[in-house]
Amino acid sequence: MRRRILVVTAVHAPSARFLPEAYASLCRQELPDGWEWHWVVQEDGRSTEVAPHLPGDDPRVTFGQGRPGGPAVARNLALARTAGEYVKVLDADDQLAPGALARDLAALEGDPGIGWATSRVLDLLPDGSTVGFDGEPEDGPIECGAVLDYWAAHDFYAQVHPASLFARRALLLALGGWMALPASEDTGLLLALNATSRGWFSSEVGLLYRKWPGQLTGQASHLEAAERAARMAVIEARARELARFRWSYPAADG
Image 1 (spheres, rainbow, N blue to C red):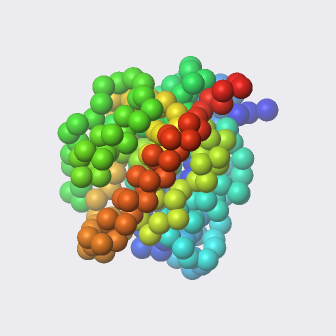
Image 2: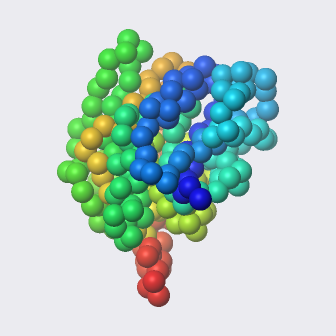
């Protein structure tokens, strides 16, 4: 029986037009023998505008719909649709770089003490050019608490990008999946993972993060001061309480 990586994508109607490029980037991935990916696309709501952008004849693709509640809700619902040992995030408007899944998989398969992985991300601009980020760590392990400390000291910006997350499904489920927030839900998950387990960073590009006028993180509401402060406060509080309780992966009893 083949082992599976669950690739989770939340989508709403405005971003559906980018799904063919996300799918093409998945199809370019090469995995070791015995492994396969399964793409679970969950619409945030119910419309007729998403399904036409998905392949209709690929058994590795599952599409679902549900009540609108934001990307966190959509991703959490996607987790129930199929099983796999690992979960990879792929936003509807982003693209995986060649080799990304294999590198993530190698990091976690090679060290049972690593709970999650991220990789270098490039912004994909409307003209097709790309721009990198400053401050990313060196290739290798990320110790517990390192992302949280950096994030708290740098105006709530992490040195690794949550849109590139790859995690053990059991660990992700134990943490409750993505946080129930209107935004920054992926940052909340990243910091919870970092509070409870060691991670891995790949300095090779793993994701192209599309910048376009309709993306949710580009809207003025995303940076509204009072809400942003509340989001950051609860994200930090959860991560610090997880660390204080010493809940960790791997479990002490193995």
